[in-house]
Length: 200
Image (cartoon, rainbow, N blue to C red; front, side, top):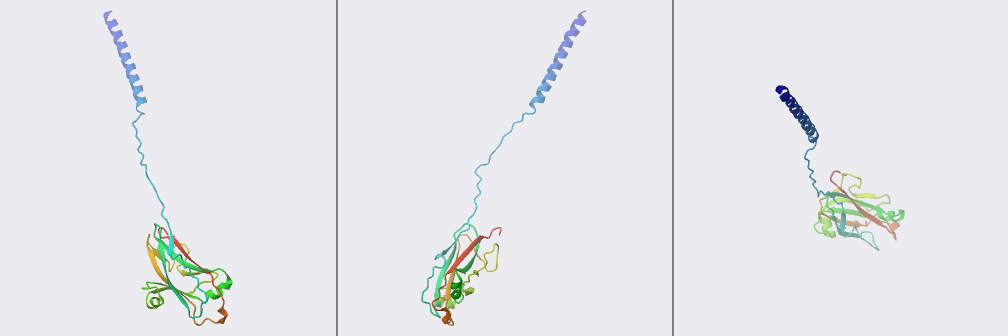
């Protein structure tokens, strides 16, 4: 009789231990899904695009010449400035505004040089390298330096950011210009086109 009593409480104790073990296993199964995590944010990232800016000194070619005679010429400096933050290439085009002015513009000879020691008539003749010489413009427009088409073209000039390109220009009316060109006017627009060189 005493053995049966002792065995019964032992069975209850074993059963209680099993239930506790099962409960603990269930608790473990739930809590293992909760992991410590953390997130770090790297703020302050900034991406700034560069700029393509072109300018000249003086502003393009503000030339007004009156009463030109065959044999006259005008010589003057133009400095092309890269005022942007990117390296760029530039080209120069010229165009007259109407068919009547094209008559005289076709006679005017426009010459652009680089490396002229002193941008005067004497300095122009004695020093420098010719980049362009030919008619000043036409109604269709002509390329004076390089080509405004996108990408590297023959004759395009490259300027680093903040750099300058010193040019010397001469506009001349040849002595051979005949009477048909008396009292004519040529209105010419000279344009400098710039584009980035990076990835282009």
